[in-house]
Image (cartoon, rainbow, N blue to C red; front, side, top):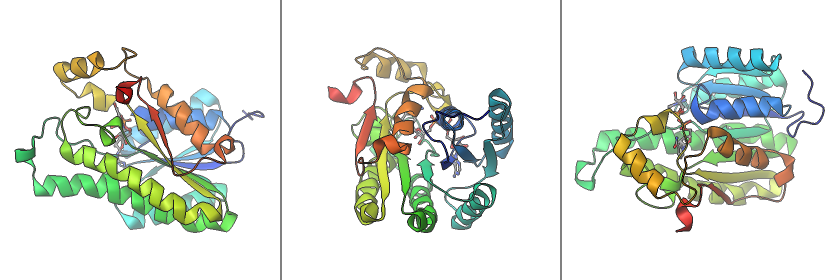
Length: 258
Ligand SMILES: NC(=O)c1ccc[n+]([C@@H]2O[C@H](COP(=O)([O-])OP(=O)(O)OC[C@H]3O[C@@H](n4cnc5c(N)ncnc54)[C@H](O)[C@@H]3O)[C@@H](O)[C@H]2O)c1
């Protein structure tokens, strides 16, 4: 259905990690707001179900699924080629895919191989995405990139304990600011969203004790639903935020205000 008042009309968005959790909700919200969406994920079975479900619910073909490992540069080139072939441009990139670390990793448990794996997906994967969309955004002198970090990138004690995971989320802050300055003159914006605890599979994989401990520290007293985060991402993706770049939106129920 044509959404005449959509906040993302005529925009083409790539959303990574969109098979489930938060990325799925963003894909649906973006499509509802008039965007054409390339939803990508490593898990192509779940992704296919998700894409079919969203398109059926919206009665449109606004979302296309594409299998994609964000840590592989050639995969990014394939995703961009697909977006341009299907929809003619790339206006928005949501770097949402990430891998969690072990839920309890004390400093003495740090494992070099495991750390490298997490850094490679969460940091290198994000950088490769930004690099891949750049030529297309430069060509149209417009673009919005949103990196999904975590409150765990700002303060300790929220990730369930993975130092490696938290380091990758902290790195996104520097990536956002460095690249935002590089491309501001070209009309491309780069921002970070820091979700607190969200009710998604990552959270449900936490032990009951961890979830209860984190919940007890959230001033608002509950975990976010993915929609609560997706609305912040939508604002940054849309032209409503045309003067917002290199900055942070923290959506955490007050967790990091303490
Ligand atoms: N759930 C939370 O409480 C929470 C809190 C703060 C931040 N976040 C962040 O929000 C984002 C979304 O998380 P979620 O909770 O929806 O988790 P999720 O696990 O449901 O979604 C992550 C998706 O990324 C995909 N993925 C993993 N590795 C990939 C790769 N190499 N290439 C492509 N896709 C890959 C997974 O298959 C999965 O579908 C992540 O960046 C996460 O770190 C989550």
